[in-house]
Structure formats: structure tokens, C-alpha cells
Length: 318
Image 1: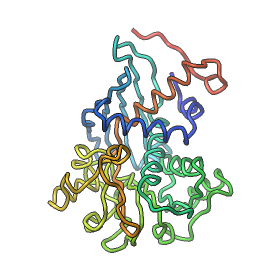
Image 2: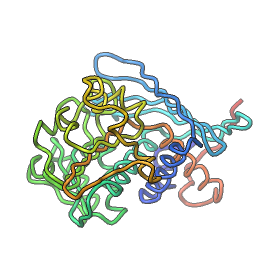
Image 3: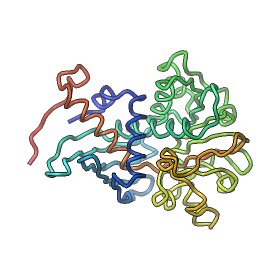
């Protein structure tokens, strides 16, 4: 069993980007399969999610929670477990902490989208929301040698992440400074809009990571009309989060939205002009979890005695 620290020690954030790239590409090729995620509501403010996928001779199931008000209770927003099984025999190969897997793949997907879709710039990327997943996004940008500008409504949280990252990070003077960056990643609970109609500027790229479920939103629907929109997967995004609102209003169709995996393969267009606004809408894919879980498991299989795996425990199941 891989606890959170084991997962994070096993896979560097920069390596996670390449693992998640493989997940997107293999899913786009049709080599990795993924049914839609299943939500179980937990009123008034939480939900449970079941996320299966298969590929590369393995199958994964992530059973994970999202309780955005948990930090006020002194608890993590995301908890759960990832089960990795052999797809040929059905044998369970590994249990991994879902919070750590989610953080790694969220950071990787946000940064991969930014690297793929943003116009060339050496300016810092802004990360809005510095909780567990926002911190992971910031760490991933820094691991990929880009400085970050941080903002969180809890100033002490942004200060904490900035101190952890050192000279590569600074805290924005205010939210407006962060949202004005050429590259922005939003990692919020999705309960309020960060970009109202007309607020995105020419050439800007935003990775929308927080509105990953029904009823959530980080950007005004009008902004989706005037931007080049790329999602992680149309089938899932058209039912959850920011793209879903525009699709339900008849403002976006599949023909007008690219999928990141197909952009990476050159099958669909990403950014088409220097002054174009690009929006990446992430709802979180199980193939991303599979990619990270596989990378961690393979790293352990190759060298079980590595210092990173001192805390890993082997248990008999079945």
C-alpha cells in the first residue's frame, strides 16, 4: 500500500506531466478505456466519485471524495483510495492514496495544458487557489522551470506555498494581479466565478481545474463563447463544469471544442493565433489516475528497496 508520502516521493511532478501526457494520448488513440465517472451526492456540500479506467495491461478504480468545506473542519478536501489491478488476471496490484494521486495528476494536467496551449512567454504562471491541488499545480510549474505567482483568499495559505517553493514563487498583491497573468490556473471549489464576461484578455490562457462537477463554475459562460475551448474529454466535460453550462445553453457543441489528447496527437487544433484566448476545462479523467498509479507502481517494481519506498507495506488480499 502506497501512502500519500510514498506516492509523492516516488514520482517527481515533472515526471508526472509526462505520465499524464501518455494517458491523454493513449485515451485519444482508443488504447485506454474510460467509462464516465459516477457521482454520489453527500448533501449539503460534498460528494463521492467512482472513476474506473483500463489500459497498458492494468485497470484502475478511484473511489474519492470532494468536501470543499473540510479545511474549515481541519480535514482534507479530497480523500479516498486508488485500486490498481492486473487486467489479465484481475489480481489487485496496489492500493494508493487517492489524494496524492489526484494532486499529482491535477498539477500535471494543468501544466501540460498550459505548455501546450499558451502563447510562448517566460512570465510566471499564476495559480489561483493554494489548497492541496493548487499547491501541486505550483510545484509542477516550478519543476518544469517556470516561476509562479500565487493567490488564495487565505493569505497565510499562499504565503505557506510561496515559502515552500522559495525564490521561484511570490504572492500576488491581490486577486486581480493573479487573474491578469498571461497563464492562469484556477484551482478553486467552483462556487463563484473568477472571470466575469469580458474579463479575459487577448492571448491569455487559463486552465480551469476547479469546476469539475455539476453546478460548478469558474468562468462566465460568455467567455467560453469568445475563447478557443479545449477540454479533457467532451463526453465528460459536456455534463460537468464550465463546458457543460455552455453546452446546455446551446453555445458550444463537440465540433467547436477540442480534446487535449487529440491536440497532443495533432488531430485537432489548440491555439490558432497569438491573440487568441484559450481555455482548458478539466473535469478530471480516470486515465490520468491510471497513468500516475502505473508510474508509481512500476517505479516500485523496478526498485523496491529505494529510499522512496521505505514506508510501503505489502499486504495479502484475497
